[in-house]
Image 1 (cartoon, rainbow, N blue to C red):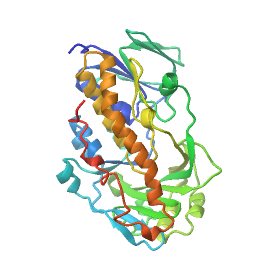
Image 2 (image 1 turned 90 degrees about the horizontal axis):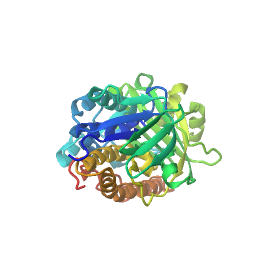
Image 3 (image 1 turned 180 degrees about the vertical axis):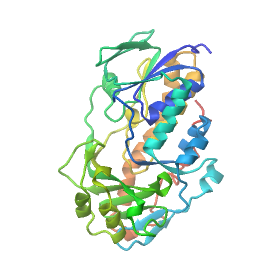
Length: 391
């Protein structure tokens, strides 16, 4: 392999960055990951690992660890916000493995992150560097140099910007573009299930939908925690950050006309486990790559949460990126192959995520049914395998 000894810098130690690092390590590349946080702590809440993303994790040898930390939901669907009527039933259970060759899972984001981090550090105990905030980026025909706020400078054959929705790498490459506020606010809560009435979490997972509002919920950590995301159309607060605390009373006021079970879940939320953020929309970038530098995950294609595929797209990106390096003779060739393989798919998912909120939060809730329902599975997203797709 021409690039066997190439050193690659990853900016950001999130799920996408760690997946990319693991894949590159798998193919024999030296990876250094630079994270601006001073430590990698437990953050976030629940996420879904659909079969398309699960293929990547299985390829990396993580199937057993992921299975131990996750839940396979047996039943689910879309429910009316007041009557609790099941508008659409979706009982997956083992069906995704039979249809697509991998399971549909639900997991705490921190648990997935810990599994990825542990695997990367088993390959190279010194691969992750915390307390490194990127402040400068430059490249020549031969290398890329990254400068950090702590005064350190490092060079490598390529830089992968996995630094999230407020990506410094993206701005350095393509300038600052102001996103559009969608008019929606989201709240994410984690509730100990021991605080909830028996039988309240039936089916295993559900999207409850009403005019201008949705409430998505499912269990994580072996059923000990309920994860939910409540979304409402509301103006007057526009902070795009996952770290802003909220009070359950605020969410209860927003969802005061909803069914008793939803209000019970909100009321049972510990205040320290409830955060809110404003939802901003971004158009797909025409390109992610410039020479030896590219973007991955939210840095490349931040998408609204209405399709539940944000983390899955980052995981797919990470595996395809590593495969592109293994199949190429230069970093520039690898990054172009990676972008060609990923751009159309991620742009499609980004745009469909934007459209899905219109389908879900329709004014006539009873008009939502199997015919108007269009989720990630019906769009064909689960049939994609990043471990085998052509690059």
